Image (tube, rainbow, N blue to C red; front, side):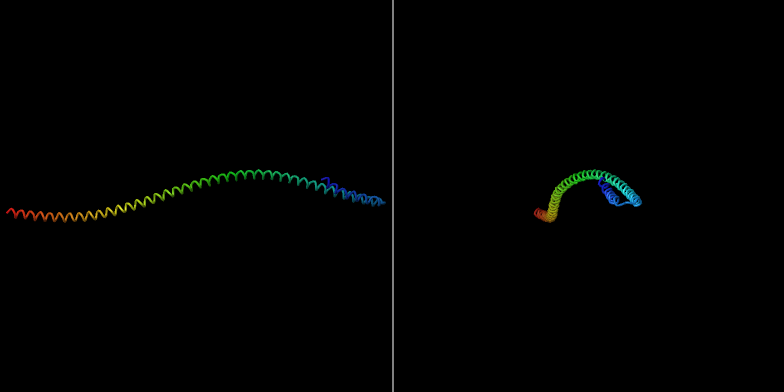
Length: 168
């Protein structure tokens, strides 16, 4: 701020030092004084304007500092949330891996049970085939027994007839 005032005051002082020794007339001097007063008024107005601008820039700077502090706080909060989310993601990944391992184990057991079921079905089918074969054999044997019983009856009848013939 002092540097700006020096820059503004130096041209005025230079103008005054150059114009004063060469002026002999009072009118010229009054005119120059009036011009210098006008320049001083203009420079003072400029200085006040610069002060106002400097104050508003300082206020803006302070607001920006506050905003930076708020943003830093928000960033810290976000970092905490991100860390929490990362921990939750890691935990979920671990659970997923455990579930996947469990699924693999259950799938193995299911495959074993399916194989056991297929083996049991094959054994049941083989047993049904054996039962059907035994039923067929039984039926054949039953027919043979029936035939043999018929033949025995015929033989008994023939023996009975022969016995009657021999008795008579």
